Image (cartoon, rainbow, N blue to C red):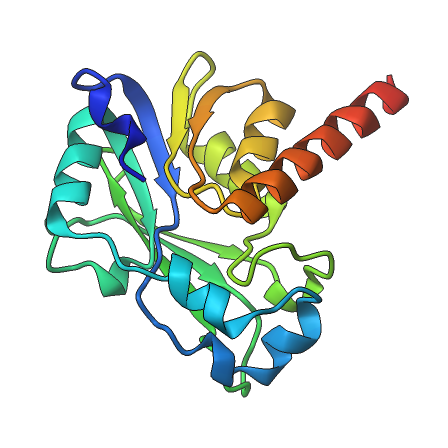
Length: 198
């Protein structure tokens, strides 16, 4: 997660990422075990380390605008903002969070809601995988053609696939070797589908 430190100020137009929240309770969530074939509670603890203030300071330095998921976990490190992005997961009455919040900086100053059930994501390769459609929505609403996108916590690569789909250049980082391999495979599968459809 520190590979981006070597970049110059404002190198990236937009950083979109979902850092670990430091929850460390995935081993208690039965449905995640059901949805993730390779679920491993011990492995989860290894990637669920919450970034510190220095991480956010550097991220704000290298990018002009930011969309940071898990905003409610990082308010100590982030300034106030009028803009937020809400992912409504359609999980009313369930034991999980019904939505996720993203801190939006240096973009249009409003609160925006994206609605898509998280339980529709069947082919999950990461416990906190977000829908491809969510990142397509973000890029369509907040980015402009020619922007360079940064994701410091690639995870399942939904953000990078959205970039490929919409024609954005990007830089992505993933520390976990297994998730990195799975993300690369998912990107290659997407590229293959693109070729087949042409």
